[in-house]
Image 1: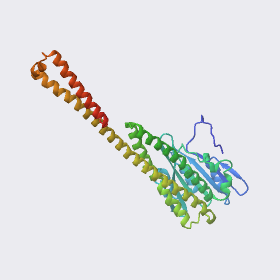
Image 2 (image 1 turned 45 degrees about the vertical axis):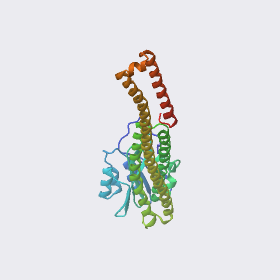
Image 3 (image 1 turned 135 degrees about the horizontal axis):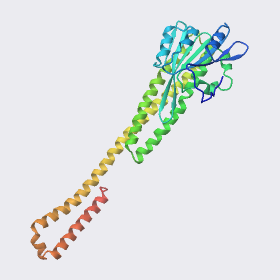
Image 4 (image 1 turned 180 degrees about the horizontal axis):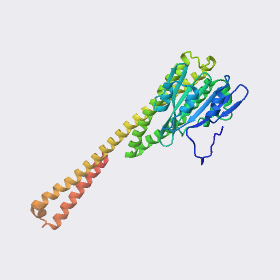
Amino acid sequence: MDANPDPEAVPTWPRIRGLAWTGERTRTVESREDLAAALADPEARVWVDVTAPEHVAVTAVTDILHLHPLIVEDIAERNQRAKVEDVEGTLHMVMFAIAYEGQVTETEIDLVLDRRSLLTVHEPGWDPLSLPQLRGDPGHLLRRGADFMLYALSDGIVDGYFPVLDAIEDEIDGLQDDVIRRPTPWTLERLFALKRELIGLRRAISPAREIFNQLTNRDHSLVAPEHVIYFRDVYDHLIRVSDEVDNDRELVAGTLEVYLSTVNNNLSVIMKRLTGVTVIIAGMGAVAGIFGMSEAGLALKGEEASGFWLVTGLVVLGAAMTAWFLRRIDWI
């Protein structure tokens, strides 16, 4: 199976890839015919991965697997929340792979588990073969059963959450530094964007906890008892992820409060400084107005010239003393 296809090749949708374990060896599945031939062996275990954009139907594969119409309908809608459903003995799970490249992106992944087959359906942009759990020879996972393949894929999806959360936490740290040093409108805009993204993450991740809670606390014929402990490990990881998302939301909310407090404090400092400047200018203006209107007895009988400069000096001295006093009380 080609994990690194030619980037210049024009893909044909839907793109079918997969593996089949026949009891003796693992072989690749790259077409409907390969899938039908693998399923013809009653002992075969099959994993088929279908990559298709939102507008492309995948009924060609679902027909071969004889999936229930309700499952086919949910896969076709591609607008589900994270969930798990048991439809006439077939397990349908919906999870989300997330990535972070300046902003959070989500990719819906439908996983359908049957007695000896596992189907994964997703849009381009997520590649299951890039997961660490599937590197090398993923056939050894399928040998242990389709349910163990489901565990490996879900574990890889959940493990991918941690780097995204680490990147978000790093950005929150940077925004907190910006808020303390010099808050700007861009800082506020990014904080609100992060708040929206974390709400979206919580909506995508939190329901996944219930998925694995059900798989680990209820007996299911499609999940081998010896494999339940592996799904419980994924459940533990999801608890950590949910806690980190909640912590990040609190950090963003706290940073927003600090931003608003910092802006209000800066506004208070500006108002104090403007008040101090007003006191100085108003005092000078009052004295100048009095002497300008009454001439103050020809500037205290100095025939205006020497008296003018005396009054001017006193006004400047008074303004300087006022400025010095306001400076001492940190008003300017």
